[in-house]
Amino acid sequence: MQQFVEGKQIFRFPDSWLVCKYDNQSFYRMHFSNVVSKGLKGVDFCAIDPEKRMLWLIEVKDYEGQLVRQKEITPEQEFIQKVVATSAGLFAAEFSATDANFEPFDFLEKMKNMTALSLVLFYNVPDSKKNMELQYLNNLKTKMLPKLKAFTPHRNDIHVLSLRHFKSFIPWKVIRVKR
Image 1 (cartoon, rainbow, N blue to C red):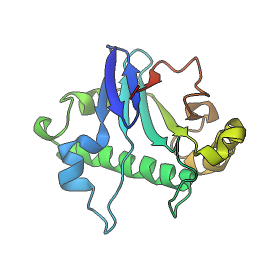
Image 2: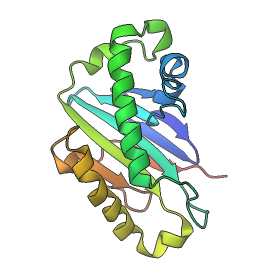
Image 3: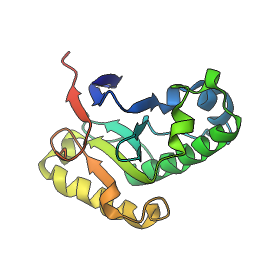
Image 4: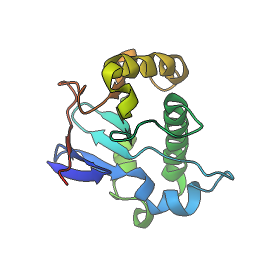
């Protein structure tokens, strides 16, 4: 399994997958993140499942240990903006990125063969929401569904997960880093 650390979690993907930490891409940092004044923020991971021909866009938010989330934008708005910005960035990269500024180098080429898209918000809720975590996660998904229909018409391809509410059918895994 390939391992990637994001915050306090380790994400494990099958060895056959191509995975990139999108916001670490030099193409994104040099050419795309500053297209607008406040910057375009991308998701944390783009992953290709070659067997199912599925592209996964995965955003990680971890507010565990914090009393509340302190951002002006709602979690669902932030996720939607990141999905839109990442999609635009991947589209732009297809035409102008080089192997030197997009890793893994064959990611963009393989992405062209994908026939499905899965969107994931991995969200560990603030401590103030712990007692109603599953309801909170389901509410986030309900709010996002109408706005993400343009990306995937299948509601089962949009997921809001956390460490405690992780679906067994998800082909990659997450564990908490012990500190």
